[in-house]
Image (cartoon, rainbow, N blue to C red):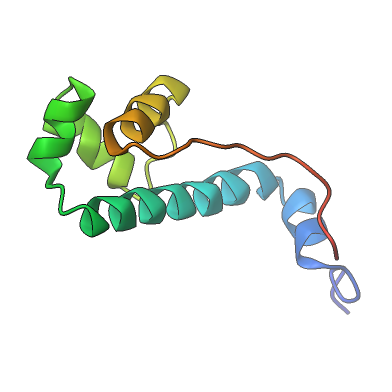
Length: 96
């Protein structure tokens, strides 16, 4: 009998010490997708985005890389300003 039967997925991830890692990866996928969509809607290339952010194209590549969870708040803020979009973070309880 599996020790995980009857538990939810979050409980399983916590028991396996993977919750933070999986959560960070999921959040970064959403962030990367949202910036990519905003860039596409405004027809902004990676090179133009880097120029607007006053940074290198490598930083933009890391911003858009779904698997790179090491992006800084400063980078997120610069990207948001570069696209003229508000940057919002929300912490709160989830409905299960």
